[in-house]
Image (cartoon, rainbow, N blue to C red; front, top):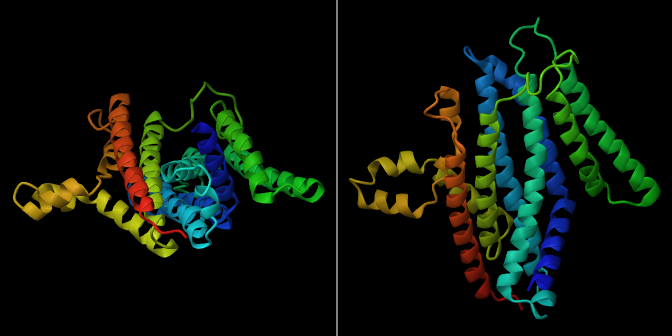
Length: 325
């Protein structure tokens, strides 16, 4: 089974990162992360709290669009072009086909999320310049933009002289360079002075919150795979948006009325709850009671796994009955 699963997953991963929309969304996410530092400067209270909120929201929306467009590009297009027949006509079962496509899409989304989160960390490290006298965070600017420029220059060089595919080569260069940049910032202050490890860095709770958003993004990918087995690109995006939107407001819209209303109770139990993955309100409260623990992260991961398995099971069921000939 693994001999059939691995090529499908690798092919889905390669196809996804080669799609133009993949690179466009990644660049748009990075641009929004940078702009968030300026947009957050218009509050009357703590601007950095708004920067945290905007950054996590950007990560969630980026995962939504990447999942929907990528799934439609890898699955829907293959069904519409009838190229799926060349796969399932071989000794490859339909469940293996769906599992392989999901694994490849999840791997590509994980790479995109990792890079977006690194940019998010750089933005948080720089912070909001609340006053004109506030200094720029020179290491963030040098290492952040330096990684981007160096990756594009290196990818252009390899593309021109060796014929390497440009978008994939950019990812190949920027992943280690951006990782190294963030690692170096753990030992540097805003003026390139050497400080204690993590002396001037974002808190650990930010990484916990980012991990929870990642779990929601993986579940969204599974929903996108299920939708893409039957629907086109636009409808897949609408389904993912609807599921994610209802999941975010599930506690407020249905949970508080669940004991008094049968329809509200039914919706509360049927709609996947995204609330456990959105902990920004607790982080901004700054209380010990609202902090994210490893135990909570483990429970959330288990819940996300159950939701993802259910969505993939639905995808397999829908694709089993799909006429592709």
